[in-house]
Amino acid sequence: MTVSAFSWRAAARRPVSTAAATALLATLSACGEPPEDAAAPSISQSELESQVAGMYPAKDDTTTVRVTCEGELPATRGAAEECRVQVDRQRATVRVSVTEVVAEEVRIDSVLVVSADRVAQELLEALTGEEFVVDEVVCPDELLGRVGEQLTCTVTPNTGSGKVIATVTKIRGLRVDFDYAVAP
Image (cartoon, rainbow, N blue to C red; front, side, top):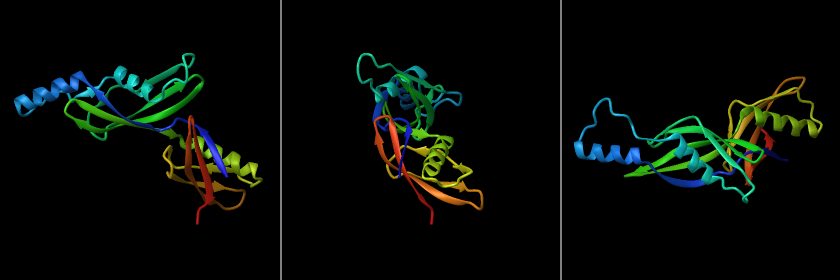
């Protein structure tokens, strides 16, 4: 059975130019070793929000896209933070990561994140909809919106317990589809 959760499609990698990163990298190149108290280059919160909004474009002129990020994102490969994206009334969390830093370009990528509670709720509704007797579903972590991504959750019926595996099958616009199967 396919279960859908509101969320966002994963976006393509995007380059972000940062004046601060460029200036600092140029300074570091010219001077050799950076001073101990030098701040690491980063993408400002407003620039990050603008870049993430561009990853989730409005359908038309009447669609509102809003993005709120936690703060600055260090321009360091592997640095990540979560942003809340809203398109009209639909909301989701995306994880934005720095994938590459080359000279003055910082490349970022984003992936939607379906919370553990949301996955558990969707699984509970799907299982009880198929008339399984289930008291609780607990998922240990979030499910990333990438096709093939998996998450094993514990299902507790009125006697015993078992495991189900949720597997992302498709990203459809603002939805993540995932199937589930009983774990071996």
